[in-house]
Each structure stands twice: as C-alpha cells, then as structure tokens.
Image 1: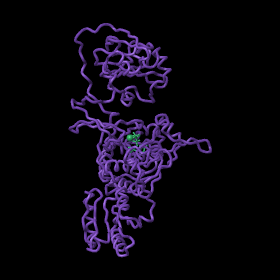
Image 2: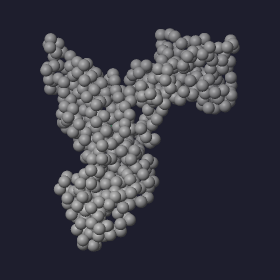
Image 3: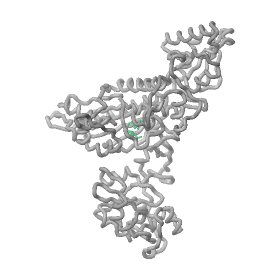
Length: 575
Ligand code: ATP
Ligand code: MG
C-alpha cells in the first residue's frame, strides 16, 4: 500500500489521558482513536495488526481441531438468569431492553449461549467431544476502563467451549488448548508466564492464566525463583505462619479509649503498636447474612479465597449501617471478642490464629482492646468459626518452604475446566453407553485479541516508537523513498516495492513528498520491522540501505539483492 493514500495520523505529543506506553504509542502512531471511554476505532495500521493476531489464533485453533462458529452478540437475559450469572456479572454486564420489553445482554462472554446451543443438539455420547470457538466482539461495562485496549468496554475475544463425556476427555482438550495458547503467544512474539488462576465468576475446578510480565500489568504474579510455582495473587497459597509462643503470661484484656482513631495506621500511631500486632475485623454481607473476616493488620483479605471459604455467591463488604447494627459501634471499631454469636460465620486467617496477642476494635465506638489472645479471648473453634488461608501472599511469605517473589503482569488469556456448572443448569445432557442421562463436562478458553496488541507494544518499544514483532506488524517492510521528486529514485523504490508484493511480502511504500527526516521518524514511530531506504546517493552506487527497526545501523545492499536479503531478515526475525 502507498503511505500517501492511507490515513495514518501520527502525532508528536504524548496524549494527556494515556497513562501507559502502549496506549500512548497506539494513539501517537495513528493506529487507533478513542470514541468514548473504553471504545476505540482501529485505523488501518491497528486493524492490520489485529487481523494478523486473529489469523494466528484462527490457524492454531483450527490445527487443534476446534471448529469456528459465530454466535450473536445480542443474548437473551433469560439464559443468564438460568445460570444466575446475571447476578455474578452484575453491573459489568451491558444490557438493553428491546421494543417488546425483552431484556438483552451484549455478550460479555458466551458460556450460556453455547451451552443452550449444545443442549438442543446433543443427545448421545457418540457426538462428544467437540470444541467450538468464535472470534467476536465482547462488551463489558468495566468500572474503570483504562490503559486503552487493555481494559476497554468493547474488545475482540477468541472464546472456545469444549464438551465432553469424561473427565479424561476434558483433561485432554484442556492440555491441547494450553499447548495451543503457548504456540499462539510465541508466534505473536510475546514472552509469557503461565500461572495458576482463580476461576472467578466463570466457576469450575481448574484454571490457568497466560500473562505477560510487565510493570503496567494490573495482575500480580506470585512465583518461586526455581519456577516450581506461579500463581495469580488472587489464587496464590501461602504456608501458614508457625504458631508463636508467649514468653510470659499475657495480662487480661484491657479496653483503651481511642477517640476517632479508626484506621489501622491511626491506631498504631496512637497506641504505639505495629500493624502486625493488630487484628483487622472486616464484615461482609451475603444476602442478609454477615460473614466476618479476621486478618492481621499488615495483611489484606484475599476476596477470592475468602469467597470460596465463605461458600461462594455474591459477597460484598457490608454497608455501614449493617456494621453499626452488628457491632453496636461506628465503623472502624469492630473486633472479634464476643462477635461470633452475632454473626453467621467468622473466618479467621491462619496468621491471626498464630498470634500470641493482639490489639483489636472493642465493638464500642472510640474504643479498642489490648492484650487480646486468640483462643483465650475469642474462639478459634466452633460451629460457625473457620480458620483458613484468606489473605493475599506478601513479601516474606513462603510456599512449600520456598520464598515467594512478586511481579506485575497483563492477563492475555485464560483456560478453565468448567465441569457441569453450565450444562446442569441449561440442560446440556447426553445419554451414555448405558442409556443413562448425564450432564456434559465443559471447558472454556479465552484470549483477548486487543490485549495481545497492547502487550506486544508494552514489551517492544524505544524512545522513537513501537518495534513490532514481525508476525503481528501491520507491514513487514517499509520502502522509504527519500527523493521522491527524482524520477529515477522514485522508479527504483517503486520497482522494489512491486517485487516485494509479488513475493508475498507485506510492504508499505512511503511515497509522500516529505523530507527524509520526517519519513524516518514516522517509520520508527509506527514500528515497521524492516526499512529499505532508497536515496539518490546510494542508488548512484547501485545500493539501497536495509535497516532493522530494532538496530541502530543499517547495511548497504545491492538493488538486485534486496529481495533475497529481506527474506533472510524476515526469517531471522521470525526465529
Ligand atoms: P480481567 O480479570 O482482566 O478483568 P477477565 O479474567 O474477566 O479479565 P476473561 O473473562 O477471562 O477476562 O476473558 C478472556 C480474555 O479477554 C482475558 O484473558 C483478556 O485477555 C480479555 N479481556 C477481558 N476483559 C477485557 C477488557 N475489558 N478489555 C480487553 N480485553 C479484555
Ligand atoms: Mg480471565
């Protein structure tokens, strides 16, 4: 294609509302434009890269035996009500009422629709297994759309769903998808880390996430140096801290007046104590029940782990009036002493149970209690009391005795073993060899196409712009014609360009009547991996310059050898 005929609106300034480099460069390189919060138009360059990513995904999915289908973006709300996920997805779901008053959901994902399809078509075990996928827009009313394509409200997802008659068959497809994802991300030129993941509102029994380690990532990866363990922090387990023993007898509990001192930091300041000596008491509500979480003052409740121990469902921090009602005190003064009989469940983190003594709220406005001994002053056992791992891993923790390390990452894909959660509820059942009716086992497998685009830029850029991995670059080669008004130079550039096209090389001809400096700047910004510069001076010696975007120096190549050299470089960049 000819640069002079394409809309590539590059900009010099860094756009004010773009916080991370990929978002800035996608805008600066004229690849996309924002329409409204979390929605973007992709211009030719951005769209070409997305199409290349899509092709890689499609090729690998087909090679893995999955079949491509296309499901509607407009989904009936009743299906979501049948699985109860209208509640789990909650406000993240975009929905609309049609002219007949029917509620519709704009697809955030498609487990319900695909299971409904399967329910109508499957009757015998002989039809199983199969794996259906689509590549289509998804809609999520994210609380805070940000980072451009990484967290947007409309994006392209490859979503696949497999159906099985045995756990072994599910396991096999899960493995195939896992390996397929490795191939896809490697072909896209991404370095990735696979982590154990929580299943979230998807449900099911096992899951892995494919993450791209980088500073701007919103996920935290917890891992051990030797690579034997890697998990999303939402899921990461920690070894329980050993029970500490008291050197001397702990005096009886003592109430202390702490006027208007409600936060952990403020209490620590006021009582000259440390967060690790505090017991934090958080009240959650599940329907009309109250469930309490106790963690050390320096720890964070891990809501994913907590929800599992609490029995799942919609669990949220309790509103202030429920806290006041339950504890008889203002928010900030809740504590475990005497609380278990007023709540439905009390879940105590291991590290609280291991404490010798602590400070907690007194369930009385403006008061705390000192010398609180877990097990002595509040129970660690009982019908509604559970001691469990409900906190986030943090610096200093170990797992299986090995030190845990932390890094940030972007989730680009996730695979799940769903079990029968959807097939039971939506009646996707089959008759087995003995004519017994059974619910299908299911797996589901998602990839965020736009997140791959952004992650590739996060990993591959320099001060001048993007450096595309060759397989997902909008063009593989840019032919920069330096003296376009010189007929001979223009013709030489045109010849090279045509030759590249004939040999199926994705080439862009920069035929704009601009100075060389401006053309080079744009070529660097849009990040085309190989640049061929055709100029009057070198052409006089029968040469062009061939330069890789990722290297600072180019090389002289005889005009007639250009194609051969470019092919060599493409192969080198692919390897
Ligand atoms: P997150 O935890 O980041 O919100 P998710 O776990 O809810 O994502 P999935 O339901 O697993 O996402 O969707 C499959 C894939 O779709 C994700 O791995 C991610 O690559 C992509 N994706 C999800 N939400 C968004 C979004 N708001 N914008 C762009 N891509 C997204
Ligand atoms: Mg996910």
